[in-house]
Structures are given as structure tokens and as C-alpha cells.
Image (cartoon, rainbow, N blue to C red; front, side, top):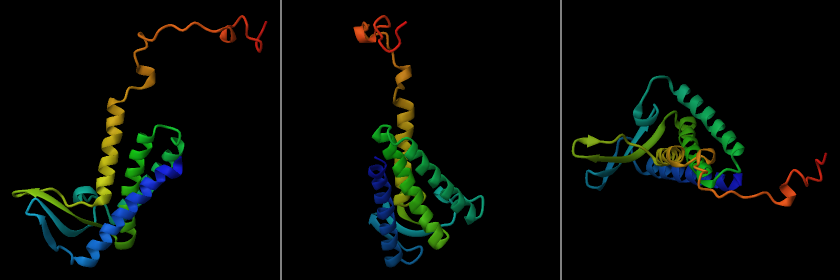
Length: 178
């Protein structure tokens, strides 16, 4: 079951890297092409920081952090390999996004971003497919944590009483008879 969910990770990384290769081979740094007027553009930038261009340490920090986070997610995916698919799917998306951006950090020392949205004078920070994967994966995880009832917290007051069968009765337990 781990391989099935890792296909999601693989697909995310391949899609992310293919789109970045297309951008790098067809754009010059800071080129921008309007796709839907000013609302949506392809704008090629390279981000040396983390999400939304935030920088507070050198590029080695983000590479190290991304590497450790990716390994931790991979280990966690293995540990929850028998859990519900949606939990594993969301983590696989996060892992795919992390690995996609990590590849950029290793190859270029910065992350290739190109999806540019805005309304009027406001522009959202430019991002990429890997960022979408991380964001969607995290939204699913947050949804699961906030809105899925834990089995131990479910209201069992409406579950009808089920009497033990003879095989379950302590009096007829052939393995632990007194």
C-alpha cells in the first residue's frame, strides 16, 4: 500500500519538475505572460527563500529543513501504511511538493516559481505546482484533524447492547478454564 500512495508523490514531483523545465526553457528570468488578463499570468521568478519569499536564513537552511522534513514524512507514511487512504494521500501530496522544491534547491540553489495571480494592484506571491501540492495536502490534513471524529470520541450511547455468545462467555472459555 505504500507504493500506491508513493505514486501520488512521484506524480506530483514529475508534474512539478516538467512545468518548471517548460518555464525555464521558454522564459527569461522575470518574463511575464498574461494568460487571463492581469488576473492570471505566468511570471518566471526564482525564490531563494521559502514560501511567499520569506527569508530568515541562508539557502542551506531551507535545503536542510526540506531534506529532514521529506525524510520524516516518508518515515511517517510508512508507519501509517495501514491507515485510511485520505490521510496517506494528503501526506504524499505534501511529500511530493517538498521533494519538487528540494530538487530545485539542489539544482539551482533556489526554487522556480511561475504561477502569478492578482486582482488590481494586489498580487498573490508567485508559486508553483509543488506549492499547490503542499497546500492542498495540508488543507486535507487539517480537515481530517478538525472534522473527523476519532473512534474513541464517538457517541456510543446509541449503539445497542450485544450479548456475548457462548464462545465469548468467560464460563465457556476453553482456553482459560479454571
